[in-house]
Structures are given as structure tokens and as C-alpha cells.
Length: 84
Image (cartoon, rainbow, N blue to C red; front, side, top):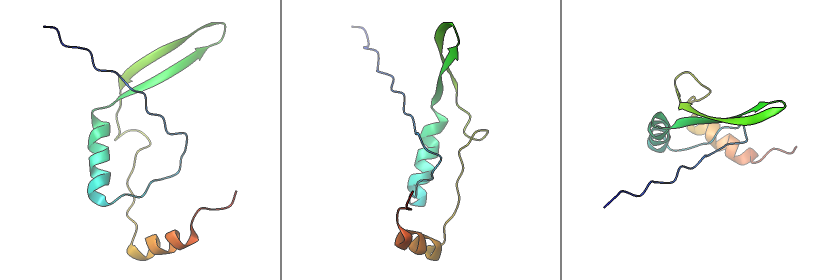
């Protein structure tokens, strides 16, 4: 009996905004990302676009944690979504 291949999913965030999570959930997200691979579609002008999958290094890329105090969180929550 052969194993069925598991589907690969590309998750893309189209934002540079942060997300607020409880600390244990934020650590879990970082642990999940440590096992992820990076995906990129590279446009090559007149040549076909090439697809690339390679190791993701969250410690070297734009992934970071920032602690919010309870007061900062409360004030930001009151401010809500900014007007564009």
C-alpha cells in the first residue's frame, strides 16, 4: 500500500502589519514557521516565470516579536482600525 502525497499549500500574507496573539500562540506560530519552506515565483521577462522552493530562515528574515504592555494593548484596541 503506497502513501498518498500530502498537498502543499502556499500561505501568503499581503501585509506588513503585525498580528496580536497571546505569547504561547505566538511561539507556536514561530515553531510552525521553522518547519516551513519559502516559495517564490520569479518573473524572468520574456522567459517563463520560474517557481522556487527553498528553506525559510525566520531568524534571518522579516519575522519578529514585539512585546506589548497591557496599557499599550488597551490603547491600541480602543483606537481600532485606522482610517486610510
